[in-house]
Amino acid sequence: MYDLKLEKISLNNEEEKNEVYEFLESFGLILDKDVDYTVVFRDGNNVIKATCSKAKNIFKCFAISEDIRGENITSSLISNLIDKLFEEGIYHSFLFTKPDKVKIFTSLNFNLIYKEKSAALLEYGIYNINKALDKMIAKNKIDVTTEKGALVMNCNPFTNGHRYLVEEASKKCREVIVFVVEEDKSLFPFNERYSIVKEGLSDLKNVNVVPGSEYIISSATFPSYFIRKEDERLKSYENIDCNIFGEYFCKRLNIIKRFVGEEPYCNVTNTYNNTLKEVMPDYGVELIEIERKSYEGNYISASKVRELIKNDQMDQIKKIVPEITWKFLNSNKGKEIREKIRKSNSPH
Image (tube, rainbow, N blue to C red; front, side, top):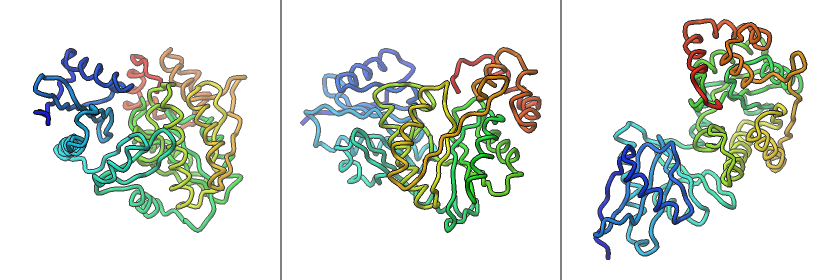
C-alpha cells in the first residue's frame, strides 16, 4: 500500500510539466498541448505514480503505474476532474481511452459512444448524444421520415465553393442538411460562420442549416482536424467521427447520402474523406464526392481566402466568395478577424 498524495500540476511550471511528460512517455503517451488542468498522484518519495488531464470538457492523458492499479486510483482521478468541471459550470464530458479500458470507465458511469479497434470515446454527465439529437430535431424542425442528404462544413469562411457543393447536393436530394462545424477553434468564430452560411443558403428552400453539435468534427470526436496533425492517432479519430455520424446521425435523421468536396490541398481532410468512403456504405449511406468549383483555373477554398486576407489581396477575394461573406469581411467584426488572420499562423 502506497502513501499517495493527489496534487495539481502547475502547467506554467516547466519542471513540473516535464515530470508529467516523462511519466507519460514511459507509457507511450504524450501530454497534449491543449490541456488546461493536470493532476498527479505522488508516492512518499515524491515520484509520480498516476496522472490525468483535461482540455475543457475532454478527459485525456491518463496513465497509472502498474504497481498501484486496483487501489481506486482511476476513480479518484476521474472524481477530481469532474469536480473541477463542476467548478467551471460544465456538466458534460468526453473521454478517449483504449478499448480494453472501456469497462473501467463504464463502471464509473461513463457511457460508450463508439469503440473501434484502437480507441474508444465515452461521455459522462446529464447530457448525451441521443438527447443532443432530440434537441437538434426539435429545434431545427427536421423531418426524420424524409430521406435526405447531408454535408458537414466548417466554412472558415463561406466561399462560392461551399455554395456550389450545397447547390449540387440540393439538386440530388429532396432535403439537405448542412451541418456547420460548431467547434470554436477556427479564425472565424462559429456564431459568425453559422449566421453567414444560414443567410447565404436561405434561397435554397430544401436546405436546412444546422449547428453541428459536439458530436461532428469536434475536439472530442476528431481533434486532429483542428491541429492538422498526421500521427498514428489520426485514423482512430477519423474512424470514430465517421462511425458516430453513421450510427447516430444517419440512422436517426434518415440521411442516405453524404456529400464531400474533393480535397486537393489538405491531406488530413483528404484522408478523412477516404475514411468516409470506407465507412458510410456500412450504414447504407452513399458517399458522393463532388469536384470543387474553380475560378481562373484554381480551386476555390477557404484556406485560399485566408491566404489572400493575410496578403492583403482583398480585390481577389470578392471574386470567390458570396456577397454575404464579402459584406461581413468589410464589417467592423470582419475587419477584426482579418487583422487576426494577418497575425496568425493557424491552419484554421
